[in-house]
Image (tube, rainbow, N blue to C red; front, side):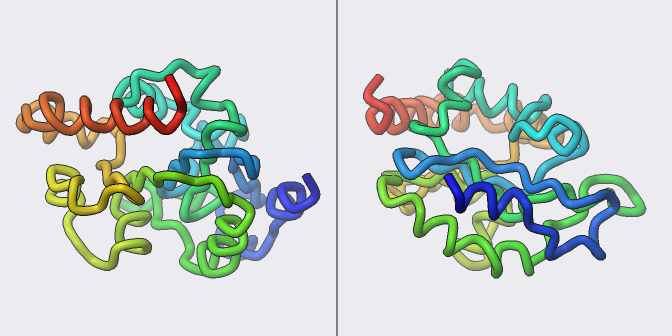
Length: 188
C-alpha cells in the first residue's frame, strides 16, 4: 500500500520530537473498527507496534481481544492523533501529540478507511479533536450519546486504574456495551 508507506516515512515534526520520527500506525482500507488514541509511548516507539505496552494490555482486556485480532489491520485500524512519540514532559508523563500531525494526516488517513463502522476515541486528545472540549470520564459513562459512530474511552494507562476501581459502572455497564458493539462490528 503506497499511502501507508508515505505516512510511515513522514518527517514533518522532526524538529519537535526527542527522537527521529517513526510514525506508528496500523490500518488497511478493509478495517471496520478504528482505534484513535493519543500518540505512541516510548516502548511503542522502540518496537513500532501500536499499543505494545501495558496500556495496550489494558485496552485489549477491556475489548476481550487477543493480540492476533487486535493487530489484524483488515479488521481494526489503529491511528493515533500524533503518529510519533512526542517525548516526556518535565514533570513526567508524555507530551501532547503535536497538533500539526493530526492537521496533516488525520483526514487523509480517514479517507482511506471507507468501511469504518465505529471509532473508539481513547483518551482526551482524540475525544477533544473529534467531539470538541469535554471531560473524558463523563463522556465514557455517557457513551450512548456518541453511538453509533463513536465510543469514548479513557486512556488505558495506569493512571486510569484508580478511577476504574472507584467507578463500578465502568466494568458493569460500559465494558459489556463496548464488547457487544465491537463483537457485532467484527462479526464475532
